[in-house]
Amino acid sequence: MEKWHEIRDTRPAWRMPDNGKVPSFAMKICYFDAFSGISGDMTVGALIDSGADAAALTAMLDSLGTGASYRVEKTKRKGIAASKFHVDFTDSKKHRHLPHILEMIDKSGMGAVAKQRASEIFRKLGEAEASVHGMPLEKVHFHEVGAIDSISDICGTAIALDLLGVDAAACSAVNVGSGTVNTQHGVLPVPTPATARLLEGKPVYARGPAMELTTPTGAAIVATLAESFGAVPTMNMLGSGYGAGDRDFPDHANVLRVLIGEARAAAEAAAVVVIEANIDDSTPEVLGYAMERLLEAGALDVSIEPIFMKKNRPGSLLRVIATRETREGLANLVLAETSTLGLRMYDAERRVQSRRSVEVATPYGAIRVKVAGNGTFAPEYEDCRARAIEHGIPIKQVFAAASHEYLKNSQ
Image (tube, rainbow, N blue to C red; front, side, top):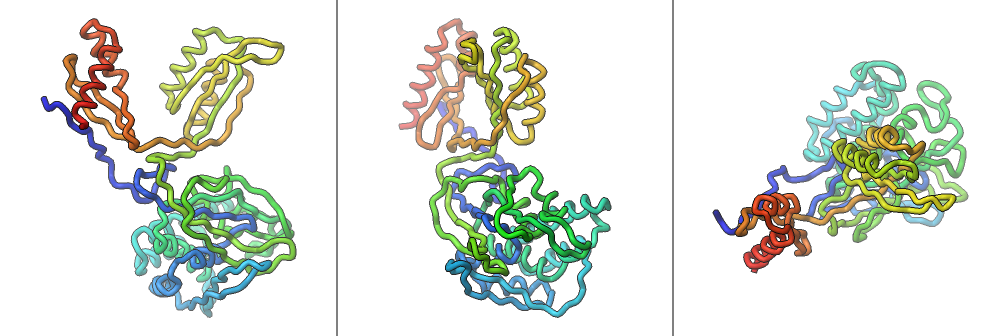
């Protein structure tokens, strides 16, 4: 056999993640800072203000065939220079179904990624409306969100992100506003039912004037595109932009800020959930079994640390790293398999360096070696363990042989 060969990653090239993962190459991130809420026109204005080519954007919007015209107005909100995106049209048609809108997008001159993003945003919006009104998705009339301005705002957002080369998005906690708003369905509380449904599971708050600050269109954009909600992610800042809202408030700038940056350090970054429990009345056997069950059920990692609890009792801190999809099942497993009566869950970000696997030939057989992007390496434990048992030798001897072969062949 060859002394060395690389085990290649045959997964398809990454473009637009749906699971929070970040590729090993430089990735451009757009962060939506919704401290004054978010709407479709604010989003397009902010992206143009951050550098998206307005002429190229409007040319692609023209290919939708809506007959609308577009203007970008330079204005200020509380002294902050911002861009206001205007959609002008005379079409009185207000009711459109999702298939019609998706067909318009598909037949347009938008790029493939922009089409995908715009279609996903509209599907997300349609699902929220269908849920709120208790009807099948295909029967939903889009009313205001199907009007030309909303089609232009959603498609304009997707086009602008594509023009900027944005790979992924994140968002702050969203200021939804308060009070009531007049809609096609009458007076509704803020956030409206569709906005509230779209932002389920996302951090929201209300601050400022008693009015709608986040529209269903804005909520659909971030609910679809943002992979995480919270603080600004770690990135090298490349630029920023401000999209103006309709009104100029007395107490704060009514703008949506976008931050454009580049992330390089991590090969994989994902939003994870940490599940913790302090336990002082479970035996080591019970905790060991619980750890096995949690790992089998999909936990990314499980650890147990000795701690001192109230009344000076020695105990154990059980910590589980879970994905958002597995957190409920793993939390229930902690409650079922240990004696704890409660636990804590909080969001965190997991980062992993780029890595590859190579296989080296040793006197004891083939051993895989993990190699990180910064050059550090480690023989795979399971391979070393199997070879040590097979040959009846100490495992440290196998580790040393594998490390020696890797270093020899990497010169």
